[in-house]
Image (cartoon, rainbow, N blue to C red; front, side, top):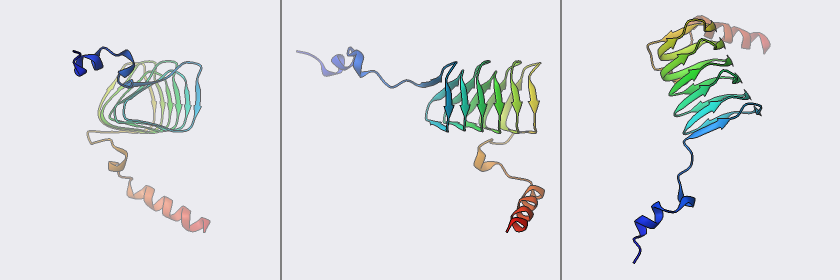
Length: 146
């Protein structure tokens, strides 16, 4: 009498999980966020945001930590490095304090960036190579602290 396929589609409790994670304005999170889906940040995160989708920081959002994602759209504040394997959009209200590694980049007039920018390569964190001068500095620091 009832088609099982039809009854599944009409059941409101069998809906799929959301494809967007939201950190609302007024919310503070201390720790890292890892998601298979998009992350939208309007609050404050003290930690890293990692997504296989897109990380969006709206004009009220603030992250103190790195971002690693396929794509990103930043209109708020970021204190950390950015690793984007696809497209990074930096809006005019954005304030970025850290280095940028991305495949493609769009920056609106008025955006503030304090750091270096490397683009045209896959911006995944594991694909980013540190300059030999930095490696030598780190090696020297380890030897002097031992």
